Length: 148
Image (cartoon, rainbow, N blue to C red; front, side):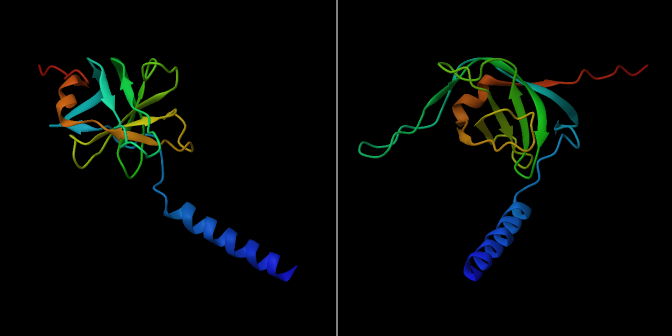
């Protein structure tokens, strides 16, 4: 009985350490800015393939084709800013997903599966957008106010 209690205490303390070490997901603290302009969304203009098939003999990994879509910023964490797809995310599935843009390198964009509007939900990355496909992603900016 005593060993069960000790095991439970160790498990709970380890759980707390793991929970505290995870980057904290929050709503957007500040909008993503590119060259001083506020980003209000992303638009994918053509299909983008994400993921790579593994060599023969290894377990299969899914390859997704992201549909042309509009993506809205929904949350951020230590990784970057998450943009949720407004329509169906990938061809062949009605599942939700989106794109994560890192704040440190704007050319690093990752696709994720899940609903980014809920900060406590884990969002698995399915792959990085390849440099050749970055041209299919357009940045939507907030209109600049005209100075009088």
